Length: 362
Image (cartoon, rainbow, N blue to C red; front, side):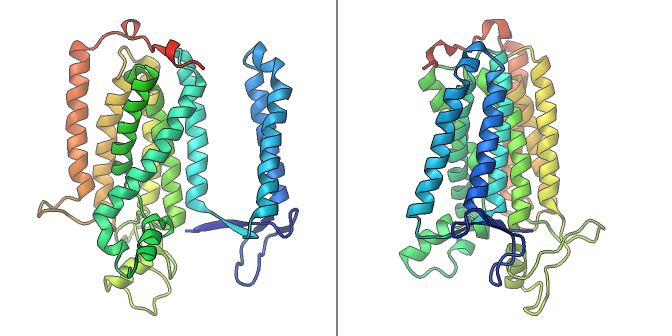
C-alpha cells in the first residue's frame, strides 16, 4: 500500500526531489512541473477532439488557449494565496480521478453512437461521482459507525472522522443506491431515456470500479481475510488492516506488519475490468435498451458475493452467515434477473426506444 503517492510543493515550483525530506521521504514535485504536465495533457486532448469535426478544428486554438489560461490561472492563485506550501497526492484519490476520466471518456464514445452528446455523459458522470462518494461513505458510516467514532469526544472530531477517507471507507452499494437516485432525477430533468443512457455508462461504471479498487489497495481499505497462498500481501504498521487486526487482538503491538491477507482489492479490481469488457461486448450486440444494465445487475452481485468470502473487514449480519453486502447482492441479483426476463418478454426494440437527446442540447 501507499496512501501518499507524492507531494506537490510550492516553495520550489520546478523542483524535483525523488528522496523527499526527512519527515516526508517520498517524491516531491514542484507545482510548475505539474502545470506543465497538465498543459501537455490538455493540448493532446484538445487536438484529439479537434480531429473529430470541422467545428472543433476551427475552435481548436481558442479552446486550447481558454483551457490553458484557466489551468495557469488556477495554479497561480494556489501559488500566491495558499497558506499550505506542500500538498499530498493520495493514491486513492488519484485512482478515483484516473478512473473517472477514463470511464467518462470511454462512455462518451458509446454515447455518440446512440445520439447522446458527449457533454451529457460528462455531466452525468460528475453527478454520479459526487453522489456515489456521498452514498458510499454514508453506507460505510451506517455499517461501521462504532469503529469510525470510537475515540470521538466532540463535534469537530466527529466531523473530521466523517470525512476522513484515509482511514477507509466507502461501501460500493451505498454509492450505487444514491448514484441511481441522482441518475434518474438527472434523466427526468434532461428528458433522456434512462435505459439508453444506462446502457452507455454501465461498462464505464465497472471500469471505474476497477481503478477504484486499485485505490483501495493504495489506501489499505477493503482488505482481505487471512491467506496462506503465495500471492498473500502484508500491510505495514499503522495501516488500516494493521490497526484493525491489532484492535481485534490478532497481532501484537510489536508486530512489524499485518498477517498475510488475501489481496481482495486486486480480486475486485480484476472483476471490475472483466465486467467492463463483458458489458461493453453486450452493448455492441444488444437488441433492446436496458440489456446492458440488466447483465451488469446480474453479474456484479455474483462477483461481489464471492469476493465477500475472502474479505477481512466484513462481518456477518443477523445470524445469517452472510455479510450485509452479500445480502444486498442477493437482492440485486434477483432484481436483475427478473428485469432481464421482463425485458426479453416485453421490452421494446432499440428502434422504438429513442434517446430523446433534443432536450439535452445547450
